[in-house]
Image (cartoon, rainbow, N blue to C red; front, side):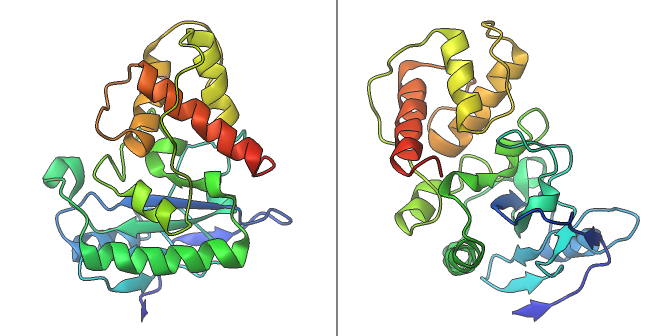
Length: 235
């Protein structure tokens, strides 16, 4: 592991557990450009780890410290995502500079690192999330090309089955999304905020269709995830 300390961190809040893993893409032209920004005091952003496309793992911030990677965000009712999470950035140009598949060495390194983090901190499966999950109104990373299903097969996070949707009533879907972890109120209206959350869910759990429409398959996958959470005792 390569050490490249960033000054962009502070203390975690006292008594708050590390119980989330948040995965991002860098969204910059090169790995070096991303590393420079994540180490620039004026940028005020950082992550605990960066994984380059060749599989190299770079540590910027010690896990015991709070890195500044999630920004304005929430998950399962908690708004200080930075305070309770580990952030991993994957080098990828992202939407602005040519979004592309994540490399095999990158995914292999991520699987090893993420498995270790999840084990050491006893992170619940549904708390392995993307930046778009915790900030659906602002972010799209790591995007629909990221292999969440592959991570789940390796015991990191969850992956849904496709079951028949028990309902497509908007308020019920909103409640289900909130129950899983997304920051959403049950207004009963398929408004812009709801569509953004649905799109974030699709990027993670139905990447073949990311349109913000809660169709039967999207809703079925959502309810199958809630069944998995119930089976695991609310993990």
